Amino acid sequence: MSQFPKDFLWGAATASYQVEGGHDAEGKGLSNWDVFSHLPGTTYQGTNGDVAVDHYHRFKEDVALMAELGMQTYRFSISWPRLLPQGTGKVNEAGVKFYSDLIDELLKHNIRPMITLYHWDLPQALQDKFGGWASREIVDAFDGYARLCYERFGDRVDLWSTFNETIVFIGMGYFTGQHPPKLNDPKVGIQACHHVFLANARAVKSFREMKINGQIGFVNVLQPNDPISDSLEDRRACEFAEGIFTHWLYDPVLKGEYPAELLAMAQQAFGVPEFHPGDEQLLKENIVDFIGLNYYKREMIAHNDDINGFEMNNSGQKGSGRGLGFKGLFKTVRNPNGVYTDWDWEVYPQGLTDAIGRITHRYGNIPIYITENGLGAKDPIVNGEVLDQPRIDYLRDHIKATADAIAQGADVRGYYPWSFIDLLSWLNGYQKQYGFVYVDHENNLARKKKLSFDWYRKVIESNGETL
Ligand code: BGP
Image (cartoon, rainbow, N blue to C red; front, side, top):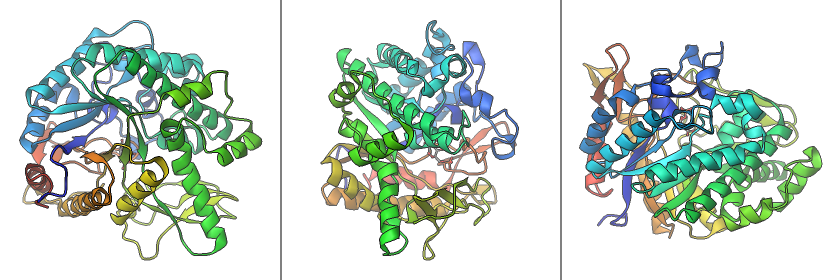
């Protein structure tokens, strides 16, 4: 018998900037990523999403492949500047039509859409006008955009999430500088993060006010942290890391408040987040319906007296990443016994079970979707076939880890591997592949099914029994 409930949803995920292309098609406005990726030295070998895998023009072909894979649900994001080129105001009807047609095509094939409203592509106009997330004005702008999406798509879509991975777009945008707007300013970053929580709460409120028939959640990175040793210093550093990576980002959307101790520390050190009257109530009254978890890896943590900064491996040269450190607080370190990908991400399926357990322990038995999970690799091509056996092994072990979490009582309702198709990895170009479908960049972006495609089709067909 399957270890998954019979209404469990099997799907796969993508994000607008990473697949669509059509960066200036039919009235779309520029996003922050359209601008950022064209600045010298920002991405791997200058790769960008101008064309990406041209999903904007080929979505029917892609949906047909999804149907062939047997996908029951598809998680994708909407490009805000495709709908609202200036971020607010005049609607680009061609952009609305694209998503509307995509939704209809999915429904025609019995694939349930899950929309992410914000997967990092901010209208550049709002960055220029008031500094994007750094300004409180973004909260109204985001709410207006969310309302437009509910109005146009809410009749056909019943699974929504507001944000994808605040830790990444705020952390790397405002603290470590690898993403737009390239800042290293904790004070601005903490306040920007507060605006994200407010924007989430406002969009959840609107969702309920507009009586959209469905559920709305928030997607976070799920990253379990474990201390590298049993020493008191390393355990303390790890607690702090867990507080920042998890509690700071989950508490405001699942409990409607910040973790008290960390809040006091931030306000003492930087004087932020700054609350306006009504903020606390807004957060408290608008808890999300579910949490989306993106799980790739765990991090081992040590105390840190020396390192400040973040050196990533964006090349796929194993061992070239140096990790993240906040001096005096904590740093990430390599697990000497760990198995690592070419991008220095630890492969640790047990961490998924453990981390789900930590979430349900802290927040109760909330509905959960695994909204991303996957292996980034340079897939081998043998006699023209893409033989991505390591991906199959990775996904199989993580699906088992998900089944273990369910057996322990967690309410996991669906699983979306990252990604449906090979797409642009933000900073790693097209060589870091995640998909079930290969895209031939030398041959007019032709699609080709990988070994994992047929494997995952059987997983879905058997509701997770055939692994
Ligand atoms: C998550 C993002 C995805 C995707 C994935 C893989 O953080 O939500 O958009 O990119 O990670 O990351 P990467 O492409 O850096 O390997």
